[in-house]
Image (tube, rainbow, N blue to C red; front, side):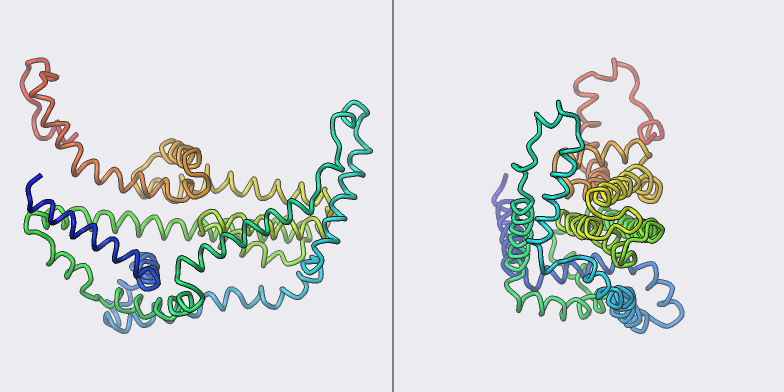
Length: 366
């Protein structure tokens, strides 16, 4: 490695370090970039008819209107939901869970009763553990954004960044202009493909969350769960957030199911039904919706998507489930750009072609 490459590496590392230090600003910029990728197809249609600036402004207005529009029925339903769930009396809820466990224990065969002691299962400890985990996760998020002021400023900066990114801000062009001349051809080849993959994945992921939320709403509505719309919105929308989102959605569903499970009567029966619904939705998302709506658009087979999701979950848990598919799709681009040429160049030197004629360009491409 010569001195020029060392200097280039130091500049890139210093830039990444600066981005991390300025994360109260760069985090909403990155969020706006991801949101821009979702809105790019819509902006292209409006740009042809109304112009780039007007189309970008309409996209920003749409992102500001849709969330309150979706949340309005949930707000109207929130009071009813809170009456069904004693959220302000978690101690009483803990006692209720303990009573349910004791009743279930007494109904079991004697052999099973001897092996289980429900008095050792303290629901208060589980509730306390979950509350501590959520509080720690919330503090971590607040600390990442630089405190409450950073979060507020991030929400204010998000629509501004989104407008300039959609309108055609010179972010990528300026970045390209600062790159070494030899890096630019690879930059021009790789970045559009990665952007296309991320855009397709985010749009498809949003569709999956929408379908998941609608199915959850219908199932809970048929079972008579209170706040079925709110719960469906939570199960669908929070599935877009890594790790913390699905956990919050399940805890909310479990509380409602246990306190008032509609036709299930609540209690452990409602909790079992809610857990079953949640599990079925997760299976449907991972093995049906993601392969059908995401994988085929990215050029991945159903089997490849399922295998990717399983490997991502095994390595990184829920977060791995979310990023596995786009990571593999982007990895395919990087592999074809950097790794495959090196592997192909080494094959003739190592004699792996068996001394025969080299394959033609068409055969190699195949």
